Amino acid sequence: MDKLVIEGGNPLVGRVKVAGAKNATLPLMCATLLTRGRCHLKNVPDLRDVRTMGRLLTMLGARTESRGDELWIDTSAAEGVEAPYDLVKTMRASVLCLGPLVAKAGQARVSLPGGCAIGERPVDQHLKGLAALGAKIELAGGYVLASAKRLKGAEITMDLVTVTGTENLIMAATLAKGRTVLRNAAREPEVVDLARALNAAGARIQGAGTATVIIDGVDELAPLEHTVMPDRIEAGTYMVAAGITRGELTIADAPVEHMTAVIAKLKEAGLRFQPTPKGLVVSARRAPKPVTIITGPYPGFPTDMQAQLMALMALSTGSAVFQETIFENRLMHTSELRRLGANIEVTGSTAVVKGARKLTGAPVMATDLRASACLVLAALAAEGTTEISRVYHLDRGYERIDQKLVAAGASIRRVAEPGPGKA
Image 1 (cartoon, rainbow, N blue to C red):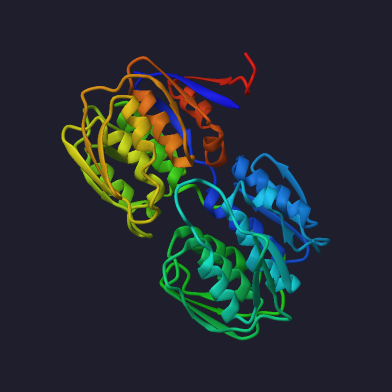
Image 2 (cartoon, rainbow, N blue to C red; image 1 turned 180 degrees about the vertical axis):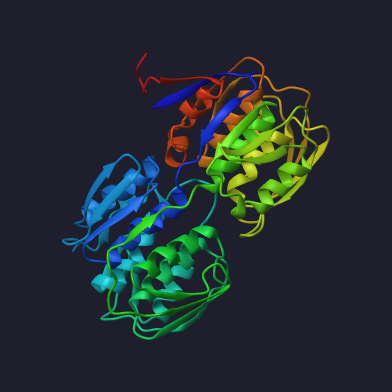
């Protein structure tokens, strides 16, 4: 297991390139199960979660091949229908194979999911939607068992907005007989990216990116050919890196059209933005101003950027307020930030961050993916040395982030931690 050793205090200056979006890549990989043939995805990030999904598809009978940021998935012999616990427990997005398997193979046996320990993320909306489409749903031994001769279009109103639920039901409905109307759908850009890829393969999906998505089922899809959208959360993390170190980063391929809420808050905090032919230049010369953050579904402020903004606000000139409305356990990083000298008070799902004049390096431990990024950002600005353990979380969602930051002037070393009982 690796840890990062970071010497803080270096302003970041340089250019970083944003990789393809993890949260777009994973559903697209599952969508290949709706097809029979050789699918081709471009701009695929090299991430632990992507490799895990590749292993799952291989277990289902698909053949995967990667070269650089391109991924080929041949589903010609993909006859498997089981996503086992050992894989699904490490990555919640594995549940995205449920809809495609039922729609294409007529049955699925998928373990109830795991992933980051940031709170309950039940799949009841997935199951209710599939049942409305005509699937028989059973829960047994920690698995979801779903079956249907052929799904049939239906009108579905989800009780709450869920991104993976929306994606699962869109994929299932593409091969259902008749029309499906999905209301209270998630509006995230990654949902739009999935719908765009499916439509190019022959699906008939309207309204992706709005609260109502209409899917007219087709009999079959052609193999997917698609370029994955850039990762807006990775781009936002680099924006904060420029601000917290009072540096200047040119961020290439930042999907600014999907980052309105994040950029607005960073401008309010005092960061400066300048579009250039080489990328978006983000800079800061002084301590950030305090802001109020309330997370919400897109186009609101993304919960996946809450921890990173909290690291920035730990050095603000006043008191910032964070209200987390999506996940009940997504303030676990506050205790680790306090170890670096942050002044944070948490009451329920609200955190008040009183800006400190400085942060000081200390040993800390990552608890989830975005908490890992938060601690890296704080360590970049802290005085002295910070050691961040359990950075395997970081590798799940950021492609070589340590290498990219080092190229911009950060002092980061990746070292192997001894295992239990080893010196």
